[in-house]
Amino acid sequence: MGKTDPDHEDPYRQQSVVLVPADTPGISINRMLKVYGYDDAPHGHGHLTFTDVRVPVANIVLGEGRGFEIIQGRLGPGRIHHAMRSIGAAERAMDWMLMRVNDERKKPFGKALREHGVILEWIAKSRIEIDAARLVVLNAAVKMDELGPKKALREIAEAKVLVPQTALTVIDRAVQSFGGAGVCQDTPLAGMWAGIRTLRLADGPDEVHLQQLGRNENRRGKEATEKIRRQQAKTAELMKRFGAQTAEPGTRIRRSKM
Image (cartoon, rainbow, N blue to C red):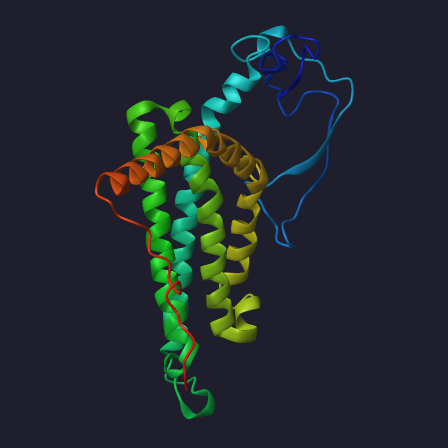
């Protein structure tokens, strides 16, 4: 995807998607990029150089200027997909944490890990957070099914921001329960954390979604203000009608004569 008409008056019509076969002359694969030191193949990214690469005009997908349309068409479902995978990772991390804290061979200070104060709290919080995140994803999926991705932008953004952060929190607790073993190759937790951490960047970083969410929600500012003003006016009207007065705490305090 690249800009093919940077001067187009519509900024959403400036990009195009072009299919470029990997064996086209002029393409150089310089290296494959790791993620937190992990080999990210086969779904990772590479550092590529395009030098005087030429392809037929027919390789433009759908037509010139429709790149943004194409990408947006997959971003909504793609973001939901990321959120769903994050839920799965969180559940898997929970399983590993449960296995660890119930391991009878591990008894620091003479007690199983599950008997130490904070462990059961971690488990409880993780279950609450995973289930809440799952409902956010399901809500976005239902909205997409019923109205389409464009009408579910808010719900998709909510899932995209919330779920990877939730999964990272649960994975981190699992890592903590394993101690040093949690950050080495003896468990999948370190690799899971690295992979899920990329989802706070993939298909739009958290900050972009939060900016969009905040901007859209803030549009209700005038409506919310008018609603509260109506409620206050109605309260004043009812109090006047029934001769009621607002009682403030402390208005009848008198000095003690002791």
